[in-house]
Image 1: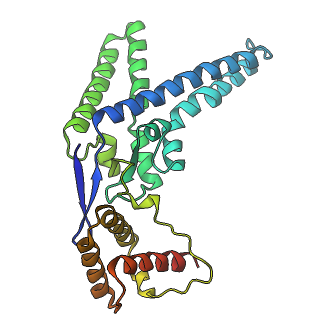
Image 2: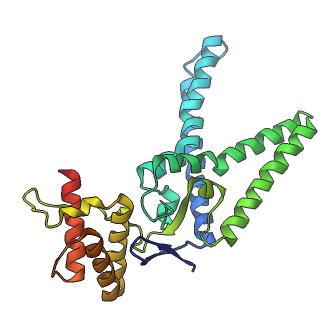
Image 3: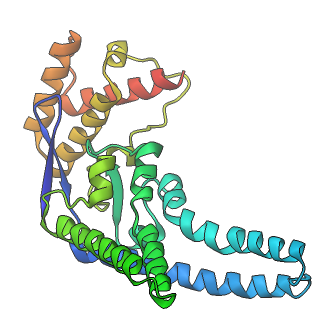
Length: 271
């Protein structure tokens, strides 16, 4: 399994496991199987609703079209972007296959990044493919051939990029600056960055607020990686650089010092 190293501002690399291609493939298959069953159920609901409508009138046809969009097309087209935004970078398929979308720094991807990925998802190109096949049926062979070749070129390029690139990024990931990682590792700080701190908590190092969100993400990732490996040198190095950068004097052990920093950040950023 490929391991991706992301440099931080503390000269310590965070490590993430890049999921195998089959995990991404199975996640896609699971999502489309779920969507297939949803569409079958939605069609039955639509048929039941249509029975009580005058579908031969102009108003009836208009209402039926809108019901089709709301019940079928809308949820199918919006499934991935809504899931990834609400489930912290995961769809149901990704959750089952233990993979997640994060930004290139290992933190939580932004809504704009999820939207960019969504605009270049396979669902849109499958729709284009269906349009191409319909044009073939209608006898518009030149337009049909162009659309089919364009879609196939996109899918082949995407597969080659995912299978061969170091970060396993497809075209949508490259433009959105996102990556997919395994979730069983704790490389993504967005899983645990928020720590519950008592209202009576007294911060020890208010200088922590001088660091950027990216720096805080890196501190959390370094602490998790150091604990996971039992690597005290990694924690000592990070603690030393933070003390020098923020001009902090402390005799706390490295792990305790980093823990206090994160608690201080959580308290000060929410109060």
